[in-house]
Image (cartoon, rainbow, N blue to C red):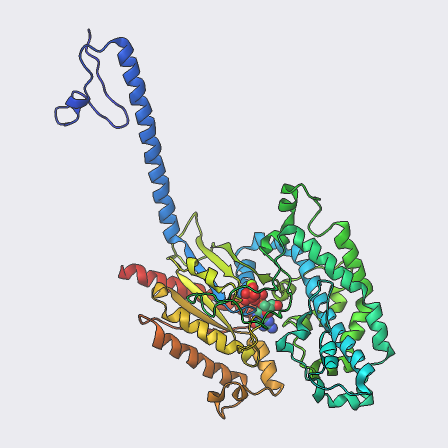
Length: 534
Ligand SMILES: Nc1nc2c(ncn2[C@@H]2O[C@H](COP(=O)(O)OP(=O)(O)OP(=O)(O)O)[C@@H](O)[C@H]2O)c(=O)[nH]1
Ligand SMILES: [Mg+2]
Protein backbone atom coordinates (compact mmCIF):
# COMPACT_ATOMS: atom_id res chain seq x y z
CA UNK A 1 0.00 0.00 0.00
CA UNK A 2 1.32 3.43 -0.89
CA UNK A 3 2.54 5.40 2.11
CA UNK A 4 0.17 8.18 3.02
CA UNK A 5 1.71 11.49 3.93
CA UNK A 6 -0.06 12.70 7.13
CA UNK A 7 0.57 16.37 7.12
CA UNK A 8 -1.77 18.55 9.10
CA UNK A 9 -2.20 21.90 7.64
CA UNK A 10 -2.91 24.21 10.57
CA UNK A 11 -0.82 22.78 13.29
CA UNK A 12 1.75 21.38 10.88
CA UNK A 13 2.18 17.98 12.58
CA UNK A 14 4.37 16.06 10.22
CA UNK A 15 4.36 12.31 10.99
CA UNK A 16 7.69 11.95 9.17
CA UNK A 17 9.35 14.78 11.06
CA UNK A 18 12.24 13.21 13.03
CA UNK A 19 12.48 16.28 15.30
CA UNK A 20 8.85 16.10 16.43
CA UNK A 21 8.71 13.87 19.57
CA UNK A 22 4.99 13.19 19.03
CA UNK A 23 5.30 12.23 15.34
CA UNK A 24 6.16 8.61 16.14
CA UNK A 25 3.28 8.29 18.65
CA UNK A 26 0.73 9.85 16.40
CA UNK A 27 1.77 7.96 13.29
CA UNK A 28 -1.10 5.76 12.08
CA UNK A 29 -0.56 2.00 12.01
CA UNK A 30 0.98 0.81 8.75
CA UNK A 31 -1.87 -1.69 8.18
CA UNK A 32 -4.63 0.91 8.53
CA UNK A 33 -7.62 0.10 6.33
CA UNK A 34 -9.24 2.79 4.14
CA UNK A 35 -12.31 2.81 6.46
CA UNK A 36 -10.05 3.32 9.49
CA UNK A 37 -8.21 6.05 7.65
CA UNK A 38 -11.49 7.84 6.92
CA UNK A 39 -12.63 7.52 10.55
CA UNK A 40 -9.25 8.74 11.84
CA UNK A 41 -9.20 11.66 9.47
CA UNK A 42 -12.72 12.59 10.63
CA UNK A 43 -11.61 12.39 14.28
CA UNK A 44 -8.57 14.49 13.54
CA UNK A 45 -10.58 17.06 11.67
CA UNK A 46 -13.12 17.27 14.54
CA UNK A 47 -10.30 17.65 17.03
CA UNK A 48 -8.73 20.31 14.86
CA UNK A 49 -12.02 22.21 14.64
CA UNK A 50 -12.48 22.14 18.42
CA UNK A 51 -8.89 23.20 18.91
CA UNK A 52 -9.36 26.08 16.44
CA UNK A 53 -12.53 27.15 18.26
CA UNK A 54 -10.68 27.18 21.58
CA UNK A 55 -7.84 29.20 20.03
CA UNK A 56 -10.33 31.68 18.63
CA UNK A 57 -12.08 31.91 21.98
CA UNK A 58 -8.77 32.63 23.74
CA UNK A 59 -7.92 35.23 21.11
CA UNK A 60 -11.29 36.96 21.62
CA UNK A 61 -10.96 36.79 25.41
CA UNK A 62 -7.46 38.26 25.23
CA UNK A 63 -8.60 41.05 23.00
CA UNK A 64 -11.59 41.71 25.29
CA UNK A 65 -9.32 41.71 28.35
CA UNK A 66 -7.05 44.20 26.60
CA UNK A 67 -10.04 46.35 25.71
CA UNK A 68 -11.35 46.07 29.30
CA UNK A 69 -8.01 47.17 30.68
CA UNK A 70 -8.30 50.25 28.49
CA UNK A 71 -11.80 51.03 29.76
CA UNK A 72 -12.00 53.37 32.74
CA UNK A 73 -14.49 52.27 35.39
CA UNK A 74 -15.99 55.23 37.26
CA UNK A 75 -18.32 55.14 40.26
CA UNK A 76 -20.51 58.11 41.20
CA UNK A 77 -20.99 58.06 44.97
CA UNK A 78 -22.60 60.30 47.57
CA UNK A 79 -25.73 60.64 49.67
CA UNK A 80 -29.22 60.90 48.13
CA UNK A 81 -29.85 64.14 46.22
CA UNK A 82 -26.15 64.99 46.16
CA UNK A 83 -26.19 65.36 42.36
CA UNK A 84 -24.82 62.00 41.11
CA UNK A 85 -27.41 61.47 38.39
CA UNK A 86 -27.15 65.13 37.44
CA UNK A 87 -23.39 64.71 36.98
CA UNK A 88 -24.04 61.65 34.84
CA UNK A 89 -26.45 63.70 32.72
CA UNK A 90 -23.66 66.23 32.15
CA UNK A 91 -21.32 63.46 30.99
CA UNK A 92 -23.92 62.10 28.60
CA UNK A 93 -24.94 65.49 27.30
CA UNK A 94 -21.31 66.21 26.31
CA UNK A 95 -19.97 62.84 25.36
CA UNK A 96 -22.93 60.64 24.36
CA UNK A 97 -24.65 63.22 22.19
CA UNK A 98 -26.69 60.88 19.98
CA UNK A 99 -28.16 58.92 22.89
CA UNK A 100 -28.81 62.17 24.75
CA UNK A 101 -30.78 63.58 21.83
CA UNK A 102 -32.83 60.39 21.59
CA UNK A 103 -33.71 60.57 25.28
CA UNK A 104 -34.43 64.27 25.44
CA UNK A 105 -38.15 64.19 24.73
CA UNK A 106 -38.63 61.44 27.28
CA UNK A 107 -37.73 63.86 30.09
CA UNK A 108 -40.80 65.99 29.39
CA UNK A 109 -43.11 63.98 31.61
CA UNK A 110 -40.49 63.89 34.39
CA UNK A 111 -40.25 67.69 34.35
CA UNK A 112 -44.05 67.96 34.43
CA UNK A 113 -44.20 65.57 37.38
CA UNK A 114 -41.53 67.60 39.21
CA UNK A 115 -43.55 70.75 38.62
CA UNK A 116 -46.78 69.23 39.89
CA UNK A 117 -45.09 67.77 42.96
CA UNK A 118 -44.04 71.29 43.96
CA UNK A 119 -47.53 72.66 43.34
CA UNK A 120 -49.00 69.87 45.47
CA UNK A 121 -46.61 70.73 48.27
CA UNK A 122 -47.69 74.37 48.17
CA UNK A 123 -51.37 73.43 48.08
CA UNK A 124 -50.83 71.31 51.16
CA UNK A 125 -49.47 74.33 52.99
CA UNK A 126 -52.57 76.34 52.06
CA UNK A 127 -54.81 73.53 53.25
CA UNK A 128 -53.01 73.57 56.57
CA UNK A 129 -53.23 77.31 56.86
CA UNK A 130 -56.93 77.25 56.13
CA UNK A 131 -57.43 74.50 58.69
CA UNK A 132 -55.43 76.48 61.16
CA UNK A 133 -57.58 79.53 60.70
CA UNK A 134 -60.60 77.33 61.28
CA UNK A 135 -59.32 76.27 64.68
CA UNK A 136 -57.45 79.40 65.52
CA UNK A 137 -60.09 80.98 67.69
CA UNK A 138 -59.81 78.23 70.24
CA UNK A 139 -55.99 78.13 69.90
CA UNK A 140 -53.86 75.27 68.71
CA UNK A 141 -51.84 73.79 71.50
CA UNK A 142 -48.52 72.41 70.29
CA UNK A 143 -48.47 68.62 70.57
CA UNK A 144 -52.28 68.44 70.83
CA UNK A 145 -54.49 66.27 68.65
CA UNK A 146 -55.53 69.43 66.83
CA UNK A 147 -51.95 70.15 65.94
CA UNK A 148 -51.45 66.57 64.76
CA UNK A 149 -54.50 67.03 62.55
CA UNK A 150 -53.00 70.13 61.05
CA UNK A 151 -49.64 68.50 60.47
CA UNK A 152 -51.27 65.72 58.49
CA UNK A 153 -51.60 67.91 55.46
CA UNK A 154 -50.21 67.20 52.07
CA UNK A 155 -51.72 63.81 51.30
CA UNK A 156 -51.49 63.12 47.63
CA UNK A 157 -53.43 60.43 45.86
CA UNK A 158 -50.64 58.08 46.74
CA UNK A 159 -51.66 58.22 50.31
CA UNK A 160 -48.55 59.45 52.01
CA UNK A 161 -47.75 63.00 52.98
CA UNK A 162 -45.28 64.69 50.68
CA UNK A 163 -42.31 66.73 51.68
CA UNK A 164 -43.90 69.42 53.87
CA UNK A 165 -44.48 66.75 56.42
CA UNK A 166 -40.93 65.54 56.25
CA UNK A 167 -38.81 66.48 59.21
CA UNK A 168 -36.50 68.54 57.02
CA UNK A 169 -39.51 70.69 56.20
CA UNK A 170 -40.36 71.02 59.81
CA UNK A 171 -43.15 73.42 60.62
CA UNK A 172 -43.20 75.67 63.61
CA UNK A 173 -46.88 76.05 64.21
CA UNK A 174 -46.71 78.11 67.34
CA UNK A 175 -44.15 80.60 66.10
CA UNK A 176 -46.15 82.01 63.24
CA UNK A 177 -46.58 85.54 64.44
CA UNK A 178 -47.69 86.61 60.98
CA UNK A 179 -50.86 84.52 61.58
CA UNK A 180 -52.20 87.61 63.30
CA UNK A 181 -51.24 89.97 60.51
CA UNK A 182 -54.34 90.47 58.30
CA UNK A 183 -52.23 91.14 55.20
CA UNK A 184 -50.87 87.57 55.41
CA UNK A 185 -54.24 85.93 55.93
CA UNK A 186 -55.39 83.23 53.55
CA UNK A 187 -58.66 84.15 51.90
CA UNK A 188 -61.42 82.83 49.62
CA UNK A 189 -59.05 83.51 46.75
CA UNK A 190 -56.71 80.81 48.09
CA UNK A 191 -59.64 78.51 48.71
CA UNK A 192 -60.61 78.98 45.08
CA UNK A 193 -57.07 78.19 43.89
CA UNK A 194 -57.24 74.96 45.86
CA UNK A 195 -60.37 73.97 43.99
CA UNK A 196 -59.18 75.12 40.58
CA UNK A 197 -55.88 73.28 40.87
CA UNK A 198 -57.45 70.08 42.19
CA UNK A 199 -57.35 68.38 38.72
CA UNK A 200 -53.56 68.37 39.02
CA UNK A 201 -53.88 65.58 41.58
CA UNK A 202 -55.27 63.33 38.86
CA UNK A 203 -52.57 64.51 36.45
CA UNK A 204 -49.93 63.60 39.04
CA UNK A 205 -51.33 60.10 39.39
CA UNK A 206 -51.62 59.69 35.60
CA UNK A 207 -48.06 60.87 35.01
CA UNK A 208 -46.75 58.43 37.58
CA UNK A 209 -48.70 55.66 35.91
CA UNK A 210 -47.47 56.75 32.52
CA UNK A 211 -43.83 56.90 33.59
CA UNK A 212 -44.20 53.64 35.45
CA UNK A 213 -45.10 51.88 32.21
CA UNK A 214 -41.51 52.24 30.99
CA UNK A 215 -39.91 50.87 34.11
CA UNK A 216 -41.08 49.25 37.27
CA UNK A 217 -42.02 51.99 39.79
CA UNK A 218 -40.39 51.42 43.14
CA UNK A 219 -42.10 52.08 46.47
CA UNK A 220 -39.53 54.18 48.27
CA UNK A 221 -41.43 54.46 51.51
CA UNK A 222 -39.38 51.94 53.33
CA UNK A 223 -38.66 50.12 56.45
CA UNK A 224 -35.53 48.65 54.94
CA UNK A 225 -32.30 48.14 56.84
CA UNK A 226 -29.91 51.07 56.59
CA UNK A 227 -26.18 51.57 56.87
CA UNK A 228 -24.21 54.80 57.13
CA UNK A 229 -21.42 53.43 54.95
CA UNK A 230 -21.20 50.56 52.45
CA UNK A 231 -18.87 48.77 54.89
CA UNK A 232 -21.34 48.62 57.81
CA UNK A 233 -23.90 45.89 58.27
CA UNK A 234 -27.35 47.30 57.50
CA UNK A 235 -29.66 47.40 60.50
CA UNK A 236 -33.45 47.96 60.58
CA UNK A 237 -34.52 51.57 61.22
CA UNK A 238 -35.58 52.39 64.72
CA UNK A 239 -39.32 52.55 65.16
CA UNK A 240 -40.66 56.00 64.45
CA UNK A 241 -38.24 56.57 61.59
CA UNK A 242 -40.59 55.01 59.03
CA UNK A 243 -42.30 58.31 58.28
CA UNK A 244 -40.84 58.99 54.88
CA UNK A 245 -41.80 61.08 51.92
CA UNK A 246 -43.06 58.82 49.19
CA UNK A 247 -40.84 59.90 46.34
CA UNK A 248 -41.56 58.53 42.91
CA UNK A 249 -38.71 56.36 41.66
CA UNK A 250 -38.15 53.78 38.97
CA UNK A 251 -35.61 51.02 38.57
CA UNK A 252 -33.97 52.55 35.53
CA UNK A 253 -34.49 56.02 34.07
CA UNK A 254 -33.18 54.89 30.70
CA UNK A 255 -36.36 52.81 30.35
CA UNK A 256 -38.46 55.87 31.10
CA UNK A 257 -36.82 58.20 28.69
CA UNK A 258 -36.60 55.68 25.86
CA UNK A 259 -39.75 53.72 26.61
CA UNK A 260 -40.74 52.69 23.09
CA UNK A 261 -38.66 49.55 22.73
CA UNK A 262 -39.63 48.29 26.16
CA UNK A 263 -43.32 48.88 25.56
CA UNK A 264 -43.17 47.24 22.17
CA UNK A 265 -41.43 44.24 23.76
CA UNK A 266 -44.22 43.96 26.29
CA UNK A 267 -46.81 44.21 23.57
CA UNK A 268 -48.03 47.49 25.03
CA UNK A 269 -49.21 50.55 23.20
CA UNK A 270 -46.43 51.62 20.89
CA UNK A 271 -46.88 55.33 20.78
CA UNK A 272 -44.24 57.92 20.17
CA UNK A 273 -42.35 58.90 23.31
CA UNK A 274 -44.89 60.31 25.76
CA UNK A 275 -47.22 61.02 22.88
CA UNK A 276 -50.19 58.80 23.73
CA UNK A 277 -53.64 60.09 24.61
CA UNK A 278 -53.11 59.85 28.38
CA UNK A 279 -50.01 61.95 28.25
CA UNK A 280 -51.60 64.45 25.90
CA UNK A 281 -54.51 65.00 28.27
CA UNK A 282 -52.04 65.53 31.15
CA UNK A 283 -50.26 68.21 29.11
CA UNK A 284 -53.57 69.91 28.27
CA UNK A 285 -54.67 69.99 31.92
CA UNK A 286 -51.30 71.39 33.00
CA UNK A 287 -51.53 74.10 30.33
CA UNK A 288 -55.07 74.99 31.41
CA UNK A 289 -53.87 75.40 35.02
CA UNK A 290 -50.93 77.65 34.07
CA UNK A 291 -52.40 80.95 35.23
CA UNK A 292 -53.63 79.52 38.52
CA UNK A 293 -50.24 77.93 39.17
CA UNK A 294 -48.57 81.28 38.48
CA UNK A 295 -51.02 83.04 40.75
CA UNK A 296 -50.25 80.52 43.48
CA UNK A 297 -46.45 80.79 43.12
CA UNK A 298 -46.44 84.58 42.90
CA UNK A 299 -48.84 85.11 45.80
CA UNK A 300 -47.03 86.89 48.64
CA UNK A 301 -49.20 85.28 51.33
CA UNK A 302 -48.20 81.88 50.00
CA UNK A 303 -44.53 82.90 49.78
CA UNK A 304 -44.65 84.16 53.34
CA UNK A 305 -46.19 80.92 54.58
CA UNK A 306 -43.55 78.83 52.77
CA UNK A 307 -40.82 80.96 54.25
CA UNK A 308 -42.17 81.01 57.77
CA UNK A 309 -42.96 77.33 57.83
CA UNK A 310 -39.53 76.59 56.37
CA UNK A 311 -41.07 74.29 53.80
CA UNK A 312 -38.31 72.63 51.86
CA UNK A 313 -39.42 72.47 48.26
CA UNK A 314 -37.30 70.27 45.97
CA UNK A 315 -34.05 72.01 44.91
CA UNK A 316 -35.32 72.65 41.41
CA UNK A 317 -38.83 73.77 42.35
CA UNK A 318 -38.06 77.47 42.01
CA UNK A 319 -36.55 76.99 38.57
CA UNK A 320 -39.59 75.14 37.20
CA UNK A 321 -42.13 77.43 38.88
CA UNK A 322 -40.40 80.52 37.49
CA UNK A 323 -40.59 78.98 34.02
CA UNK A 324 -44.33 78.22 34.03
CA UNK A 325 -44.98 80.28 30.90
CA UNK A 326 -42.65 78.02 28.96
CA UNK A 327 -43.26 74.67 30.66
CA UNK A 328 -47.01 74.69 31.29
CA UNK A 329 -47.91 74.82 27.63
CA UNK A 330 -49.32 72.32 25.17
CA UNK A 331 -46.23 72.46 22.96
CA UNK A 332 -43.61 72.51 25.70
CA UNK A 333 -40.16 71.53 24.42
CA UNK A 334 -37.81 70.25 27.07
CA UNK A 335 -34.34 71.86 27.28
CA UNK A 336 -31.00 70.63 28.66
CA UNK A 337 -31.40 73.03 31.58
CA UNK A 338 -34.75 71.43 32.41
CA UNK A 339 -33.32 67.93 32.23
CA UNK A 340 -30.46 68.56 34.63
CA UNK A 341 -32.98 69.94 37.10
CA UNK A 342 -35.50 67.13 36.71
CA UNK A 343 -35.32 64.93 39.77
CA UNK A 344 -35.82 61.19 39.47
CA UNK A 345 -34.53 59.24 42.43
CA UNK A 346 -32.08 56.45 41.55
CA UNK A 347 -32.84 53.01 42.89
CA UNK A 348 -30.22 50.30 42.45
CA UNK A 349 -27.17 50.73 40.24
CA UNK A 350 -27.16 51.73 36.62
CA UNK A 351 -24.31 51.49 34.13
CA UNK A 352 -23.69 53.95 31.31
CA UNK A 353 -21.03 54.04 28.63
CA UNK A 354 -19.33 57.26 27.60
CA UNK A 355 -16.83 57.37 24.73
CA UNK A 356 -14.38 60.24 24.34
CA UNK A 357 -13.71 60.45 20.63
CA UNK A 358 -11.49 63.53 20.97
CA UNK A 359 -9.57 62.25 23.95
CA UNK A 360 -5.91 63.27 24.36
CA UNK A 361 -3.57 61.32 22.07
CA UNK A 362 -2.03 59.25 24.85
CA UNK A 363 -5.42 57.96 26.09
CA UNK A 364 -5.86 54.22 25.59
CA UNK A 365 -8.48 53.57 22.94
CA UNK A 366 -11.15 50.99 22.32
CA UNK A 367 -12.46 51.02 18.75
CA UNK A 368 -11.11 54.52 18.17
CA UNK A 369 -12.35 56.16 21.37
CA UNK A 370 -11.42 56.27 25.04
CA UNK A 371 -14.20 54.49 26.86
CA UNK A 372 -15.50 55.13 30.37
CA UNK A 373 -18.05 52.97 32.08
CA UNK A 374 -19.90 55.11 34.61
CA UNK A 375 -21.96 53.56 37.43
CA UNK A 376 -24.68 55.68 39.03
CA UNK A 377 -25.93 54.44 42.40
CA UNK A 378 -28.82 55.22 44.72
CA UNK A 379 -27.40 57.28 47.61
CA UNK A 380 -30.00 56.65 50.32
CA UNK A 381 -28.72 54.82 53.42
CA UNK A 382 -30.91 51.83 52.54
CA UNK A 383 -28.97 51.39 49.30
CA UNK A 384 -25.36 51.89 50.32
CA UNK A 385 -24.62 48.25 51.09
CA UNK A 386 -25.26 47.55 47.38
CA UNK A 387 -22.24 49.68 46.37
CA UNK A 388 -19.66 47.27 47.76
CA UNK A 389 -19.51 44.71 44.91
CA UNK A 390 -18.83 47.56 42.47
CA UNK A 391 -15.64 48.68 44.19
CA UNK A 392 -13.52 45.96 42.60
CA UNK A 393 -11.35 47.22 39.72
CA UNK A 394 -12.76 50.72 40.00
CA UNK A 395 -10.34 53.23 38.52
CA UNK A 396 -12.00 56.35 39.78
CA UNK A 397 -14.69 57.49 42.21
CA UNK A 398 -16.41 60.83 41.80
CA UNK A 399 -17.80 61.58 45.24
CA UNK A 400 -20.47 64.26 45.54
CA UNK A 401 -21.00 66.22 48.71
CA UNK A 402 -23.83 68.77 48.58
CA UNK A 403 -22.23 71.53 50.63
CA UNK A 404 -25.44 73.55 50.80
CA UNK A 405 -27.00 70.92 53.06
CA UNK A 406 -25.17 71.86 56.25
CA UNK A 407 -28.47 72.78 57.95
CA UNK A 408 -30.54 69.87 56.60
CA UNK A 409 -31.22 66.38 57.82
CA UNK A 410 -31.31 63.05 56.03
CA UNK A 411 -34.69 62.14 54.64
CA UNK A 412 -34.23 58.51 55.65
CA UNK A 413 -32.93 59.30 59.14
CA UNK A 414 -33.91 62.76 60.41
CA UNK A 415 -31.54 62.43 63.34
CA UNK A 416 -28.55 62.82 61.03
CA UNK A 417 -27.21 66.09 59.65
CA UNK A 418 -26.55 65.82 55.91
CA UNK A 419 -23.08 67.39 55.96
CA UNK A 420 -22.07 65.11 58.80
CA UNK A 421 -23.36 62.12 56.83
CA UNK A 422 -21.33 63.14 53.76
CA UNK A 423 -18.18 63.59 55.83
CA UNK A 424 -18.61 60.18 57.42
CA UNK A 425 -19.15 58.58 54.03
CA UNK A 426 -16.13 60.35 52.51
CA UNK A 427 -13.95 59.17 55.39
CA UNK A 428 -15.09 55.57 54.95
CA UNK A 429 -14.32 55.68 51.22
CA UNK A 430 -10.89 57.28 51.81
CA UNK A 431 -9.82 54.75 54.40
CA UNK A 432 -10.88 51.48 52.83
CA UNK A 433 -7.96 49.35 51.64
CA UNK A 434 -10.18 47.97 48.90
CA UNK A 435 -9.98 51.35 47.19
CA UNK A 436 -6.41 52.31 48.02
CA UNK A 437 -5.43 52.37 44.33
CA UNK A 438 -8.60 54.12 43.23
CA UNK A 439 -8.42 57.77 42.24
CA UNK A 440 -10.75 59.84 44.41
CA UNK A 441 -12.34 62.99 43.04
CA UNK A 442 -14.56 65.15 45.21
CA UNK A 443 -17.27 67.47 43.92
CA UNK A 444 -18.29 69.99 46.57
CA UNK A 445 -21.63 70.39 44.88
CA UNK A 446 -24.60 72.76 45.05
CA UNK A 447 -22.38 75.81 45.50
CA UNK A 448 -25.17 77.96 43.98
CA UNK A 449 -27.57 76.87 46.73
CA UNK A 450 -24.86 77.32 49.35
CA UNK A 451 -24.36 80.90 48.20
CA UNK A 452 -28.09 81.59 48.27
CA UNK A 453 -28.50 80.05 51.70
CA UNK A 454 -25.60 81.99 53.25
CA UNK A 455 -26.90 85.20 51.69
CA UNK A 456 -30.33 84.59 53.19
CA UNK A 457 -28.70 84.72 56.61
CA UNK A 458 -28.34 81.04 57.54
CA UNK A 459 -25.07 80.76 59.45
CA UNK A 460 -22.70 77.85 59.01
CA UNK A 461 -21.27 78.27 62.51
CA UNK A 462 -24.71 77.50 63.99
CA UNK A 463 -24.39 73.98 62.56
CA UNK A 464 -20.62 73.59 62.41
CA UNK A 465 -19.23 75.23 65.51
CA UNK A 466 -15.62 74.65 64.40
CA UNK A 467 -16.22 77.23 61.65
CA UNK A 468 -16.12 79.89 64.35
CA UNK A 469 -16.10 83.55 63.40
CA UNK A 470 -14.93 83.13 59.81
CA UNK A 471 -16.98 85.11 57.25
CA UNK A 472 -20.35 83.58 56.41
CA UNK A 473 -19.56 83.83 52.70
CA UNK A 474 -19.41 81.24 49.99
CA UNK A 475 -15.68 81.57 49.17
CA UNK A 476 -14.65 81.30 52.78
CA UNK A 477 -17.01 78.36 53.48
CA UNK A 478 -15.88 76.45 50.39
CA UNK A 479 -12.21 77.02 51.31
CA UNK A 480 -12.82 75.81 54.86
CA UNK A 481 -14.74 72.69 53.81
CA UNK A 482 -12.22 71.89 51.08
CA UNK A 483 -9.45 71.85 53.68
CA UNK A 484 -11.54 69.59 55.92
CA UNK A 485 -12.15 67.07 53.12
CA UNK A 486 -8.51 67.22 52.07
CA UNK A 487 -7.39 66.58 55.62
CA UNK A 488 -9.63 63.50 55.86
CA UNK A 489 -8.19 62.18 52.58
CA UNK A 490 -4.64 62.74 53.79
CA UNK A 491 -5.18 61.32 57.26
CA UNK A 492 -7.17 58.23 56.39
CA UNK A 493 -5.88 57.08 52.96
CA UNK A 494 -3.96 53.81 53.35
CA UNK A 495 -1.45 55.14 50.78
CA UNK A 496 -0.60 58.73 49.89
CA UNK A 497 -2.72 60.03 47.03
CA UNK A 498 -3.36 63.25 45.19
CA UNK A 499 -6.46 65.25 46.04
CA UNK A 500 -8.80 66.37 43.30
CA UNK A 501 -11.42 68.64 44.82
CA UNK A 502 -13.75 70.80 42.75
CA UNK A 503 -16.41 73.25 43.94
CA UNK A 504 -19.30 72.56 41.55
CA UNK A 505 -22.84 73.46 40.59
CA UNK A 506 -23.66 70.58 38.31
CA UNK A 507 -26.91 72.18 37.15
CA UNK A 508 -24.69 74.76 35.45
CA UNK A 509 -23.91 72.72 32.35
CA UNK A 510 -21.28 74.95 30.76
CA UNK A 511 -19.23 75.31 33.95
CA UNK A 512 -19.59 71.56 34.55
CA UNK A 513 -18.35 70.82 31.02
CA UNK A 514 -15.06 72.50 31.95
CA UNK A 515 -14.85 70.60 35.22
CA UNK A 516 -15.47 67.30 33.43
CA UNK A 517 -12.68 68.05 30.98
CA UNK A 518 -10.33 68.71 33.84
CA UNK A 519 -11.51 65.49 35.54
CA UNK A 520 -10.92 63.57 32.32
CA UNK A 521 -7.36 64.90 32.00
CA UNK A 522 -6.68 64.16 35.68
CA UNK A 523 -7.86 60.57 35.24
CA UNK A 524 -5.62 60.18 32.21
CA UNK A 525 -2.62 61.53 34.10
CA UNK A 526 -3.19 59.12 37.00
CA UNK A 527 -3.66 56.21 34.59
CA UNK A 528 -0.45 56.96 32.76
CA UNK A 529 1.43 57.40 36.01
CA UNK A 530 0.17 54.08 37.35
CA UNK A 531 0.97 52.23 34.12
CA UNK A 532 4.52 53.61 34.21
CA UNK A 533 4.93 52.50 37.82
CA UNK A 534 3.78 48.96 37.03
N1 LIG B 1 -29.41 74.12 42.34
C1 LIG B 1 -28.76 72.97 42.21
N2 LIG B 1 -29.45 71.84 42.14
C2 LIG B 1 -28.75 70.69 41.99
C3 LIG B 1 -27.34 70.64 41.91
N3 LIG B 1 -26.97 69.36 41.76
C4 LIG B 1 -28.09 68.63 41.72
N4 LIG B 1 -29.17 69.42 41.86
C5 LIG B 1 -30.59 69.03 41.89
O1 LIG B 1 -30.75 68.19 43.02
C6 LIG B 1 -31.70 67.18 42.74
C7 LIG B 1 -31.11 65.83 43.09
O2 LIG B 1 -30.06 65.53 42.21
P1 LIG B 1 -29.79 64.04 41.71
O3 LIG B 1 -28.71 64.12 40.69
O4 LIG B 1 -31.05 63.39 41.34
O5 LIG B 1 -29.24 63.39 43.04
P2 LIG B 1 -28.66 61.90 43.25
O6 LIG B 1 -27.38 62.05 43.99
O7 LIG B 1 -28.61 61.18 41.96
O8 LIG B 1 -29.76 61.30 44.23
P3 LIG B 1 -30.19 59.74 44.41
O9 LIG B 1 -30.52 59.22 43.07
O10 LIG B 1 -31.38 59.80 45.33
O11 LIG B 1 -29.04 59.04 45.07
C8 LIG B 1 -32.07 67.34 41.26
O12 LIG B 1 -33.28 68.01 41.15
C9 LIG B 1 -30.95 68.18 40.69
O13 LIG B 1 -31.37 69.00 39.62
C10 LIG B 1 -26.63 71.89 42.01
O14 LIG B 1 -25.41 71.95 41.97
N5 LIG B 1 -27.40 73.00 42.17
MG1 LIG C 1 -29.60 59.54 41.28
